[in-house]
Amino acid sequence: MTEAVSEWLALDVRDIDEKKLLPGFIGKDGMQTHLPTQIVKIPFENPDQIAVVSWRWDGDLRIKGSWNVASVVNVAKRRGIRYLFIDIISIDQTLPIDDLIEQVVAFSTLYTKITVLAAYDKTGDDWTHMKSTVLRPWILNEIRLFRQNSGKIIYVGHARQGCKQINEVRAEGIAVRLTAYGVSHWDPYFKLLLEIIWRTSFIESIIGVLLEDVGMSSILDFKYIIHAYSHILSVAYEQMERNDYLLTTAILCHTHGKNDLIENGFTIKRDIEKLRYCRYSFTAVSDVPSGSWRYYKIFLDGTKVALWRAHRDDVLHSQKLDKLSSTDRVIFAALGLTASEYNDFVGTEEARRECLLMNNGKKMPPPALEVVEIDLSLDAPTV
Image (cartoon, rainbow, N blue to C red; front, side, top):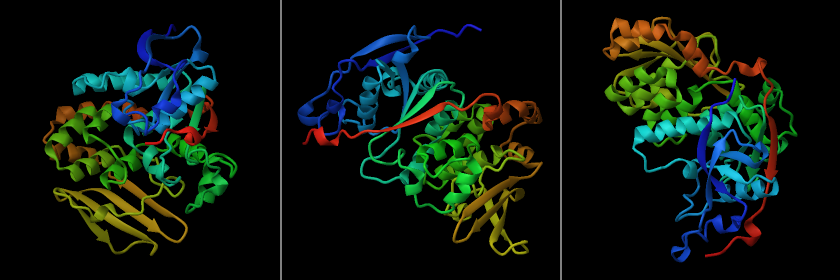
């Protein structure tokens, strides 16, 4: 099948001095670095000369510099990559929100097609921030798309975080996670993050946003990221308070038979049952099978819809969200949706599972991963 042609504005890195993209240069005395750009069509005649960037926004390249963009430009030049697709450049950020999101979704397909340069390090922080960064819903979505890429993912670090070897990481239950995901102590920390994300769904990201441990500019964006749930999430957003909407999103996106929150994945150390809700309530279950687990029934408008289990000991923090066979129907009724709308939803079960779960592991090998740690600080401009 012939690949559809698209075209995007790309950063032409050939003549860029990446050090002038660093904080302390852009914005100093009103200075703005000229950024040469070029419209580039995909597919490109020489795929080795193009790459798409997935990054933690740490500057806007106009009045504030970016360590992450400067780092990927440095690596691109050394690898013979001339054109970089960067969302802040390739997508017109002044578009109306619906048009902007449409462009973001179209742009995201690049993460499945061409070389990816990923950069999530955070100056002045340590490796522990990486979890909350990769759980940001849009970044999580990009990383999930990486799994469909048959090429290469290059992680570009500048602060010894994503590139740090796992044997240097001191985290609870790390040995269990390495065993579960087939990762070595000598692998980079970013590889472990990839393997966890590729084998779970969106639940921990949603709950991280609920707890305000994970950043998200607009929680309405879940309807674009988890697109198979677009209609029900739009209705829930319009009718519910923030915490109720996010808990509804998490419950709806639970998939039977899939451990979204497990001891081998990320960890949540705070309690969702202690948050304030308008329409949800949690009731502790006293007769639990194990004293190390805490069980809660979750009720929506007085009707039981889910079970929350939390386990904490000196080694692991693990949680499990279960929903009932009647949960979806109860939520639809609570939102005033019709039986016809519910039946339409039921009919999309396969599409919804495909949206939530990554089942392509057996169909194609994972992309090659390379990590590159660079140091631009020695020549960084000073203010």
